Length: 206
Ligand SMILES: Cc1cc2nc3c(=O)[nH]c(=O)nc-3n(C[C@H](O)[C@H](O)[C@H](O)COP(=O)(O)O)c2cc1C
Image 1 (cartoon, rainbow, N blue to C red):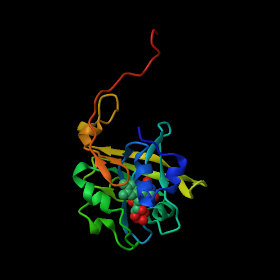
Image 2: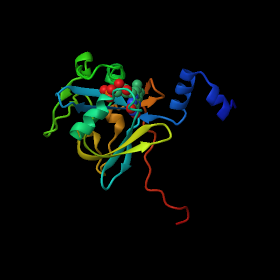
Image 3: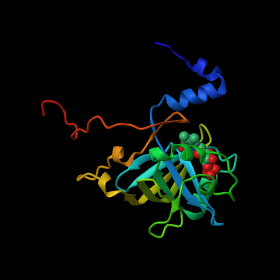
């Protein structure tokens, strides 16, 4: 087996290390965060760090890169306290990826892609129309990660929208049916296939 040591990683060419470290922890969730500025410009951007934090209360978390450059999504969330999380549909991967391009705050990524915005349940922040699973969220808190100058955002999941055929009797959302993609590294999009679903695991011989 090939092996990279801490020294190898430290001395790697920057982009090579970025690709390696971004892919070595496995597949990540692929979402578009929708937000709106105080000047009413709708923003949409791809995020791969959105993770379930807890079910009761319903919480999620994600990482914001260092705010040494303008971060429109982050600013909008802090200003308005609300945002939307939209699963990336397999048909939208090219446009979804393009939302990571650095557009100025006054330009809406909705105008620069074929992604369509939609407004639901009184949210000012836009949802992505073609996404089959969407969450309405409220900002709760942020924590500074001093090791790399990033921010960990904690938010409440207050509303869940989905196509009716996606949910199973026990509340489980079948992501296969939503055609939700996953991210491999920073630029690879995959469509996973469910292999098996298991019962709650109990000790053997119980
Ligand atoms: C696949 C992928 C995943 C990304 N995940 C994150 C992330 O989790 N956190 C983050 O701050 N930026 C992430 N980005 C970068 C943002 O999409 C990018 O900075 C974008 O311009 C942010 O938009 P904004 O400036 O409107 O907030 C990711 C980019 C790509 C291509």
